[in-house]
Every structure is written in structure tokens, then in C-alpha cells.
Length: 230
Image 1 (cartoon, helix red, strand yellow):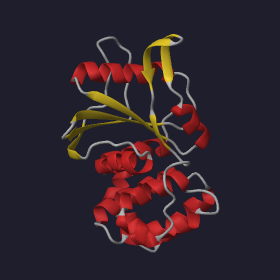
Image 2 (cartoon, rainbow, N blue to C red; image 1 turned 120 degrees about the horizontal axis):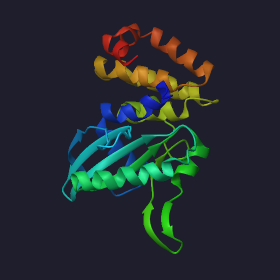
Image 3 (cartoon, helix red, strand yellow; image 1 turned 90 degrees about the horizontal axis):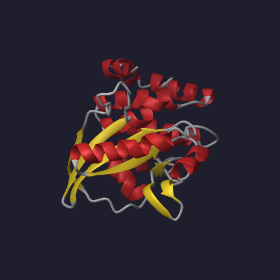
């Protein structure tokens, strides 16, 4: 069953598509070209046969160097079925749109990140017919943003930091910095980000702290958009 944390981890990129390319550039140090425009696409990859296949989030990025499809998968744990489905997604999307697909996996687990980063190689050893190398965002490379000014400079990245690192002894500083930074952006966006973070906090103490912080900023927590996300 798909949980709230799974949904929030990829839907943040639907809310702010530019965050994904910034993460590729700044976190993974991938020289991805600066997009002129990013559009969300239909995530349904089902064919005529009754086999349902859906990616989590699918974005089309237009750049000076060409068009790219950004395929975002939220992954909670290792799942060997992805060995077949991820290559299928990429091949299908290339055939359908005739532009290069890029697979990005986001996770809150270091172990899952290590698993996801391993190449998927199909074919004869030493002469593989297909190799898939996911780009992975997780606790080991997403920056810890625990400074208020740093959070204000890039609020969506600070939200991603809280969603990824919102547990352990450093959670308090991360959440407090983000709570202050949310006051500097428009209330509609803040309300959605508030719910994304709440959905991803698995640590009961961190979740309660976040809700206490948001109670002090009641407008964000009670905003109609936050209710829609819930």
C-alpha cells in the first residue's frame, strides 16, 4: 500500500519542479542543463494489455541541450521487482516521447539508497544489452539544512532536507529552521510544504515537534490547501 511518506517524497517535485534539477546539479553534481520550461506529464504507462504500470512523478524538461524526461520514483525499501519495471519505464517513455529519460530515485533510507544506486544490467555478463543507472537522492547526499538563513535561500530544498533527515538528534534544528523559513514564502506554497513534511516524519517525537511548531503558525496548518493535501 502506498503511504503518505511515499507520496510526499515525489509530489514535492510536482509542487516545485525546478527543485529536481537543482538537486541533480547541487546534490548529485550531475551537469544537467538549466531548463527553460518544465511540465508535468501523465504518469500512466499502461499499454493495451491489462497490466497497470505507473511511475510516481513524470516531468518533461526543455533545455538548450535538448528535451529530457525526469522519472521520479519514491522508494521506501529494496524491491527486486524494480529490476524489471524501471528498465520498462525508461524504454517505454523513450519510445513514446522520443526524448531521453532520466531515472531519479528518492528515499529516506541509506540502505535503500545503496540498493537503488546499484546498476541494473540485463543480458550476457560483460556484454549487457541494457544497463540502467538510477540517480539516487537520500540521507547520505541530501544536505542537512539546519540554519535559518540557508533555509530561507532555498525553501523547497530545506523542505526536502526535513523530509529526508527528519529524525535523530539533528531533527530539531532542521525543523525549527524550516518553520522560520516558511514565513518568508507565500502562504499557499507554505501550506502544501507543511503537509509534505508532516507526512514524511516517521519519528513520533519529530512529528509532534513539527505539529507544535505549526500550531504557532496556525494559518499554514489550517490553510485549505493543506487540508486538500491531507
